[in-house]
Length: 267
Image (cartoon, rainbow, N blue to C red):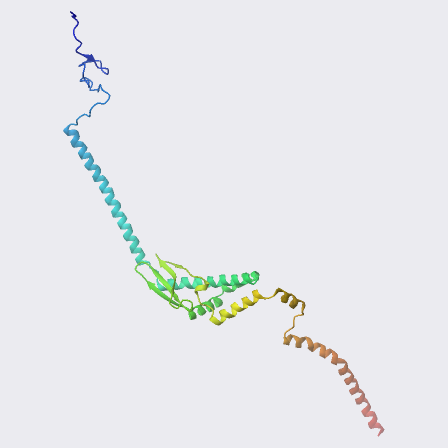
């Protein structure tokens, strides 16, 4: 009969103390002795602390969200008030439109000069366009043929043009936050009358449809001077041809004057 006692304990691999053979956790060092230890039940104090931490975290997140929403609402309200207070008025639209009209005319003149091959004149026309007289004349023509209608909204405004091109009206400028943005070009405004527009179109049509052979023949033919230039040119010729006759007449007059006293003495 084996007298060796049955092994009733084993050593903890972490602390070396004797523990039960089937122990899954050392009672001395509290280390788990299995690979997948079961969750340790938490004490009431630990559970209460965790719940308090969660409540505090929710309060912080809620406070930050509240501050963000209030700040965002304040910014939106401020933007709305600024937009309402800075709606461009009618005078701002008119100034912007009149400035754009002059730029449209200047661009159209440059385009026309380029079309007829006279781009060298562009600097001179640009200088002329900057004079007060030309600008005043163009704006007067614009005011005569175009009517501007101002429409104000709560946060924005716009201007419409009424002319022979748009008898029902067309929006040509939009404004908000104190700024006006015109949106039209030469084809939207009426500066020239219908008759003037037709004459200009006919001129360019004739210019582009002219026969090159006819231009060549015309260049070989001497250009005729205007009537007043012809008279000025022919006048010296007539006077030079009549000068000998005048001299001869003066000589005859002198001879007659000399012969008259001699005949009187003879008598």
